[in-house]
Amino acid sequence: MVSEVKGTEIESPKQTHHQPHNDIVSPEIHANGYEVVTNNHYGGDAEFSHSHVALVHPHSLLPLPVPPEEISKPKQNDDVPSSFSTMPTIGSFLWQRSNDLSAAIAKRVSSFRQSMEEDNNGDNENRDVTEFNLSGVKVVVKQKLDDEEQPMKGRISFFSRSGCRDCTAVRRFFREKALDFVEINVDVFAERERELRERTGSASVPQIFFNEKLVGGLVALNSLRNSGEFDRRVKEMVAEKVAGDEAPFPPVYGFDCPENDRMDEMVVAVRVLRQRLPIQDRLKRMKMVKNCFEGNELVEALVHHLDCLQNEAVEIGKQLTRKHFIHHVFGENDFEEGNNLYRFLEHEPFIPRCFNFRGATNDNEPKIAAAISVRLTKIMSAILESYASDDRQHLDYGAISRSEEFRRYVNITQDLQRVNLLELSENEKLAFFLNLYNAMVIHAVISVGCPEGVIDRRSFFNDFLYVIGGHPYSLNVIKNGILRCNRRSPYSLVKPFSTGDRRLEVVLVKFNPLVHFGLCNGTKSSPKVRYFSPHRVVDELRGAAREFFENDGIEVDLEKRTVHLARDFKWFGGDFGQEKLEILKWLINYLDPNKAGLLTHLLGDGGPVHISYQNFDWSINSSVAIN
Image (tube, rainbow, N blue to C red; front, side):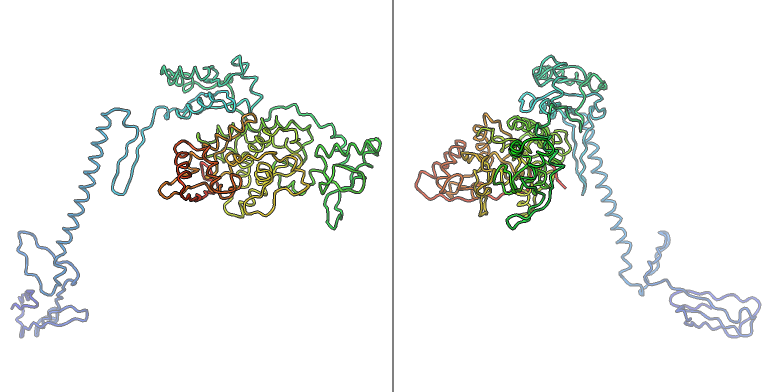
């Protein structure tokens, strides 16, 4: 007998030996949720007396089985949710989208390969750099050049001098060709000038060497370049040959050239006094004066230890004061015997903040101030030529700090400790302090860092000191005290030098407002850094002013009748004129014809003229980031 249960046919087992008395098929619900068909046999064997056949239905969330094509699909069960009946359609959609994406990627890669093959068949000059874009990815492929595969084994070197135009042309040519070279500046490395003469037979520069082979100067370089022989000569003589001992060797860091320095004639007396004088703190004028001694103590020490007369000891004390070995603590007199208090230069309170003082006073005979100025200028010019951009607007302070040129500059600044500035002429003094200001800014950025706020800038310009001629000089003192003839700085109520200050003797006699365009304070809005020669300093300042106004130092807006000036004209407007129109008339002399014509038109038509001031960019003029 056959019975239907939920559409599923169950065939009852065949009975061969016993005939059942009653054959009933009754469905039961098992505890686990399955339907169970129970066959009750009465009067039969024990194994057939009570048997169960379980009917298991698939879970409702499982997909339905799909019959083979040759077998007809059974009727869909109405109990299965209709949303799951569309699962094959969703899978087909995802499979189709995957195929489309794969086809798109394959097509893009195929087109890229085809374009690469076309480029390979084209001109070699047009395939140095290939750029192509994929979805979400940008790839730039740069062809590796032959000279990059094999770095040069030899060395290109040339002798130069600071401020030499031909040397600048050679340097620029090597940089454009991306060639490594060694520059030997004989103004910095004076000990190499003798080698230059021995190798070339003259002191003229530039002189170029490929390993030990002398090529010549700029004329020889241009001849090789114009004839097309330069690359071949470089490959033949430098790229494939190692530089031997005969080639000029690069400058070595940390080795100073021997100089003919001699000790000061007063150094014997100074050494005796440093050992014998009672240096101590004393109370004077209701003030505690540290590390000082009395004048009569100095006289007694000289008479007792140098076996000299009292008047001779007094004269020695005056000479020590004039040579800046000792100073009166209040700066009132040179030297007098009595209870006046004096102190050694190394005991001055400002000495710890002086960056050209290294533990002890320079006891060598002071050099001539003009000679020191020339020496410092040549070294700093060499630094700019090697570590500044071509337009001098950006400097690589990190490379400067690690250079041998800068190390030698710092050493030479020690000669300024007791130099006599009074022997400088007016133009020599102007050039000296302009150059020293620009050099001190570079030294300050390297030593203390770039100022980031108002407080840092105040410390930067006031607390970074050099001891020059026995007295402290900061950037603010040099600019406002010396170059601006002791004028107050912006937002200051007092002048740099008060009455009785010995530094007043160094102040320029005549003020030149063009000094503002020769000073670089290490920021992007300041004029570019440059160095001046004493004989042409005034003309060079005029050129600096014209260049400053050409580089957006002034803008004239005819429509709004407004002149946009650099922020310096707001801070130091009194240096250029008492009134705004007077300032604008002064500017016309340093403008190019176009801007001068516009400004003249505004001033001549009788209408109102407005002045606005540009924002000042205090960020550092560095070519690389500074930590």
